[in-house]
Length: 398
Image (cartoon, one colour):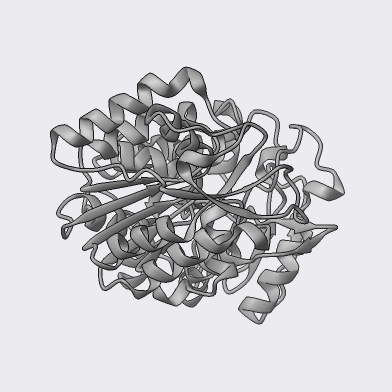
């Protein structure tokens, strides 16, 4: 952890939190189904910071975004009420939810209050200075523990850190930086990256960055289909970006120049429709028909990639290699997941779909580090400056 950023742990250890008002920006943006939390990793990951502050004698305020509310109005679907209930269970104490909190919060040392969806505040996304100053006035210490939002300069991630008396990183943010640094700064070789997703265009910069660093670059999903096109293979009516074929070839060439590789699927699992009930047919990669949709990698490709992963010294994983939500097309992602779990190398995984796959295949305890970030995870890997980290560094330097 860079010493140029203050940490909540160091403040707690030195006794500086006793009796102080601590404002924690967490990332508890969890999936909901009719108001019921379906996966609570992010809430559980937020607990250590809250517990650390409470145990140090602080009065604790916590907020998070949830979904995409319209500023100025938080509907029941946008409310953190289910999060408050789950947080109360995890902490073993009442966690009241407070709406309209910007102008004042009543909370005593040893207590915690959850502040309603911060993205409902007018000016949040624009990093409005007036809103930022009001939030900063609520606390003695501001804690950013939301790595998943570190790539956004918003009032609750950047502005408040400018104006709060003290600004620091929470334990989750600290752990993210340590794990990412371990994966990038001096990685054990061979280094393998898995990048899945629907579009090459949205992940082109990360593909090019990784192509300059890794020994094997595994592509999955719609991205893999575009790379198959670049390799001259038929993809039928599969999701792909023909306009990005030249860019895919550029990534392949970049890897080759370094003696590295982008493994192209040798077999795939196809269907003629996109549905959970579709009939799955395994085909050689050069036998895909015009009306086929490629929805997974085939068993030979899966095993080849698994061999690569088992021998890896470092693994970076962002995205599945097929439509794993449909059982008929889940085999590739299942095999990849198990290979990562079995690997003796250090693995770091991030992104919503990746978290879902880790949950489905129950390998969380076998992954070296699970990042709570999606976009922030990718931007950090690209070497971009993350605004929420940058302001913490500025504050620590005085």
